[in-house]
Amino acid sequence: MADEAYETSGYAAIKEKFGFNQTELELIGTALTAGGLFAIIPGLLYDRLANCHKLGPRLVAGTGVVLHAAGYLGLWAAVQGFITVSYSVLLLFGLVAASAVVWFDAGAVVTCMRNFPSERGTVAGVLKTFLGLSASVMTTIYMGAFEPDGPAFLLFVGLLPAALAAVMIPFLNFVPFEEASVRSCFTSGRRYAAYYSIAGLLVAYQVAGGLAGQAASLDHRDRFGIMCGALLLLAAVALLPLGAGGLVSRPAPGSGWNAEGPGAAEAGACVRDTRFWLLWSTFFTGMGAGFCFLNNLAQMVEALGGAGSERALCVLLFTSANTVGRMAAGSMTERLLHHYGVPRTVFMPPLAALTAVSSVITAVAGHAALQPTSLLAGFAFGCHWSLMPVLTSELFGLRHMASNQSVIHLAPTLGNLVLATYLAGGLYQRHGRLHGDPPGTCFGQGCYRATFLAIAGLATAQVAASTVLYLRTRGLYRAEFAALQRAAMH
Image 1 (cartoon, helix red, strand yellow):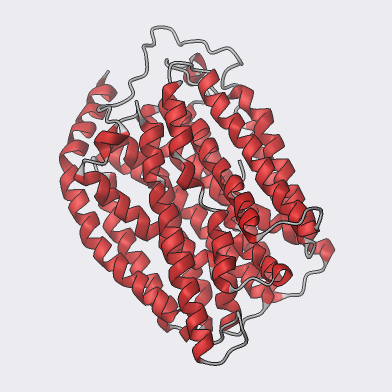
Image 2 (cartoon, helix red, strand yellow; image 1 turned 135 degrees about the vertical axis):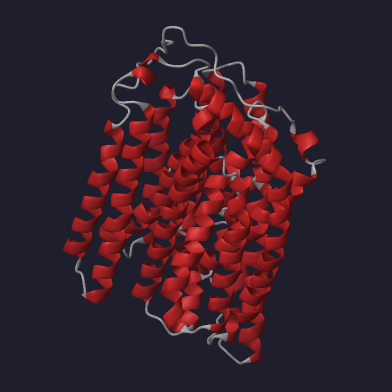
């Protein structure tokens, strides 16, 4: 599963080809990350087929394959001129491509968390880490093999991820008991550590390659070599499932059925819970702010007088920090909960504060601050992604997690639409008109100042809201920690 939809800065060329203004371009970027609008459909289908341990996850993920290929190949055909489409049809292609993500998310993330309920934080961290890595890997592939051929890259994006996902679908199913291979010498804990190690190496490698590209002019052969190295590291991931069981699941001797955790609130019950809206607002603000920064990064670099190569570096720094955030929020929160009983919700107020700080720096600092703020904003954004499925399952249970998660998914999607598209795009165009900049452009620090000051205000308010969420969930985590200790004694 590749999250190339995050590479929205790479679609700035669409603005030139079709003559879109900034708001229209941002709406296309939003369409490519708006899968959450349709998340309720795969969520309800997955829960409906919850007792079909193989068919359910595979059908949901397979639908994602079809939608992914159809959406991106439609965009490719439009950019190539093979078909003549209106702006609304172009948006439709983006929405189809984006909707694939939530089908993959329901099929893969929910299934894996149900398979490993006592390790759900680590599982979510691993899956969301490699999801985040895919954006920077796609950037590396584009620079190493396709630049500046955008249409060829769109064709690649439409075909290869869909083909890889289709190959892996037969291995996806819910296993409601402890698998025999879990008790092998290479335990699941060691596998998780290996996944994180590979992810860390890949992040460091890509950041080093990006910095090398800034320090010296790299030719096509150099960029191709960097791409090959990244793909070799990524290929090592395929070796880790070896020895983890065959196509037929075999229960370990004396194993029982996996518990799916306390609580079984359906989506209708969730929306009547105050904790739900506190959680929802946290993800609306925190992840909407991240989308706003990323979707507008290309234009921010241009507005502040930066070069095109700096745009690519800032995207790489953001996506790499995004990956580190996903790793940290998955593994560290799991360890602190299991060993010391630290509630996961205790990390939400600091993340809101970090979002506020990075937004203020973006608003008031100049060109020199773009690279460090790319790291801060990316880290906070990534932490939110790993915490979203885990907190949803812990607060409202695993039994109806797919549909509950689909409602939570609306938060980042609407945050993206409101903050990244209408707020940022509208203020960008308004500032450009007031200062007499060419139509569709804006130059100077003021282009995004008001946008990020507004986001900083929202994030500051979110510090208080997430603190209330923490206070309301302390009892739940005390009970969970006690249950974990009892399980460890046996």
